[in-house]
Amino acid sequence: MELLPIGSVVLLKDGEKRLMIYGIKQFNEEKNELYDYVGCLYPEGNMTPKYNYVFNHVDIEIVYFVGLVDAEFELFRKNLKKVEGQPTNINTIIKQ
Image (tube, rainbow, N blue to C red; front, side):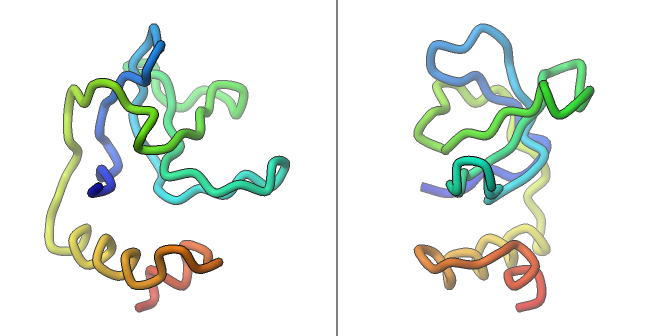
């Protein structure tokens, strides 16, 4: 599984509305769980935290659009694989 870049537009299984991914590897402190993505409604965008959705790659049914994949994102994805399965935060990945 290759994580999608931010800007990607997806529909979740049993979803009625598309979401745009705007964050990767998001930690939900209330549930103490790590999710692959955080998204907002498409085309509305980020309105309030009430309309932010955390989900995993396996929850995606359809990918409508893949966001920008460039050298910087590929490096980010490579560094992310190095720490996969380890407790970490996004800042440690960015600094690698």
